[in-house]
Length: 219
Ligand code: C5P
Image 1 (cartoon, rainbow, N blue to C red):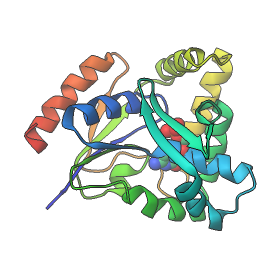
Image 2 (image 1 turned 180 degrees about the horizontal axis):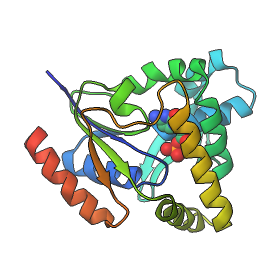
Image 3 (image 1 turned 90 degrees about the vertical axis):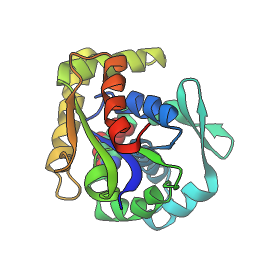
Image 4 (image 1 turned 135 degrees about the horizontal axis):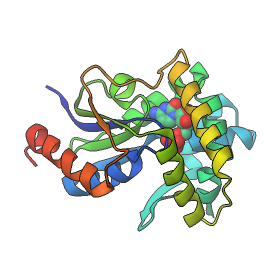
């Protein structure tokens, strides 16, 4: 029996987060943004927390909440969401995510998000490593230029300055690192359905995905 899980993997800014939010609402499933966990991990590590203490610190001091703009992250009472969403934190997350201890520490934490009600999990290795038994696996892709444009909009909406050329370069570098690392590289699971969202609106990606969930979950 397969698990009641939709995994959405793909490179940065391919639309995973938007699709995950929309489809989890539609299905009434819980949501896991694993990239955000890697960002929290990098943030805590840069604050001086050792690898061996990070899971405990996440469980004790970090709160994930939802609002209209997505997930809000608190460290004790401080809102650290904007810091986590910076490209510098993304780079730090990409670097630390290649260390075996990081991935081991986050594996159980990520699996702990599963409840029988169902889960939508987005990231890089959700379908290949973390939830290999998921019922529906999607790999969402888009061209680097389109993804850079989407990330530019997202960062501008958060009031952050963006240099487009530097952003495209950052995204390409980060993808290359994610695809070529030894552990859990960014590759589509063999049983995944690949969607190229370059020419699609979020609504079109959602409507295509709903056809897939109808088949797998009868919803
Ligand atoms: O998805 P997001 O851009 O927030 O992820 C930040 C970084 O965390 C990625 O570039 C990747 O290196 C790492 N990551 C990962 N495995 C995941 C999710 C994110 O290695 N499942």
